[in-house]
Amino acid sequence: MRVKKRRKLVVRDVSKVRALRTPLRQEILNVLERLGSGTVKEMAAELRRPPASLYYHIHKLVDAGLVNEAGSRPAGRRREAVYEAAAEKIIIDRSVATEGFTDALMDLHRATLRAAERESIAALSAECVDGRKRRDDVTLLRLTARLRPADARRARQMLREIARFMKEHDGPDTPTAFAFTTTLVRVQDESDV
Image (tube, rainbow, N blue to C red):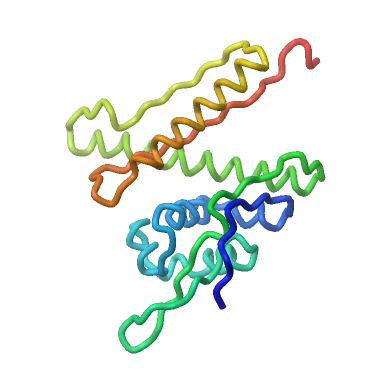
């Protein structure tokens, strides 16, 4: 049964946030966003993983209402399910202040940072293995700055612009994939103590 894809899904349900707390499930959603829709076999090829490793995670995303079954396609003598993200844009409403929701949100952040760490280490390891210094494979930047609220909003907007730029220039014919993970957080300062 085909479910109409929404333009935006605002997540206020802790079960939906919990469904996103593994890096692989986040990657599946990213692939579906890039492809529009896809079979397990197509997603596995994009992720360079065996298809069998995805089924459990896709079903968890479907159960949470973050991914929909969008139909099926012939696959030899049988039919293969086609999946798509439940919405073009999934936004987590962080104003939900229950303890369980906050804990799930922290798990989601940890999973995202674990994925970024693995990607960075793999890129650095590849640089060491082939003996070539590829200066542009890994860019790491961390800084702390004191910003006015308006400047923090502007910084967030610039980060969204980078994300939009990357999405607009992402293509199947592009030879090299780059991952972009960022965190802009307000840190505790003297006025918070």
